[in-house]
Length: 350
Image: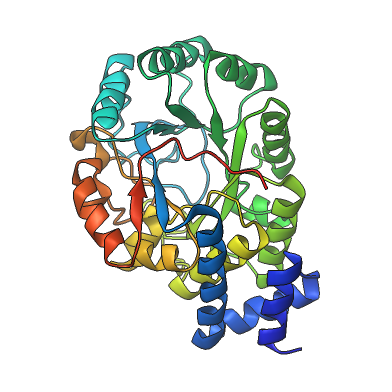
């Protein structure tokens, strides 16, 4: 079956059998003409739902302490060279106030699993943001917690939760994480979040160590089962202070292919063009948008800590990545025919 027919079937049916999906991915990873055809349909699909509008999120990386030791992550517990920080409640609220003034209507609180913020303290931060900005959405990205904790935060006003599953293969998961972390618990968290009514985001690293195309097909199948409202993918980029420091990064071709495939599978999903994509090539996020993405997440963290939230080497933290440079971002988007949409940017039901 030709790539053209596979793409048409994916576009029409929103899914492919595993063998056909693996065939399409293999072709697209290797042939620019296949990627271009996927991107054109994905871009058309995204614009049919969102128009030529890009949602913006204000990212607040509020702590780089983490209790975990994931083998790929630059803020892993065992990285003694990391310059650690965590923001106070007052600093977080100040980031939100500045972001609100810049036009942001979604705030993303992202950090390592830092238990120095108690569950109650996090709930108070969430409630205070909602009190100051009741029309804004709050997204959390702070890892694996209990159902009771997720409920506490939802009741305090959290709207969305980002938790990448990283890989849907238990064997591959064990190659990326210490034994204390399991795919079963990660999935439990995602289904708990869904049950509690969060808008849920998941995703995976593209080109992570030991990943196969069959693994990626499994990831797409799991995402189909979960039916999240948000999907975050980006290329694996090694960090010099991790066990994976010498591994090959994920590629632009693979990442763009998967953005397009995900858009065709999930026309309404919130799909970011990630910072990692902009790190591997200067116009990576623009290329991500042209491949079907519809969200960007500029950084609202205080300037003096941004360079310390290094999940991987050479992570963007200034220039158009900085939230204050929103006008520059607008110009870059305009150059490819898109404009910034200043709103909460909620998931659109079919």
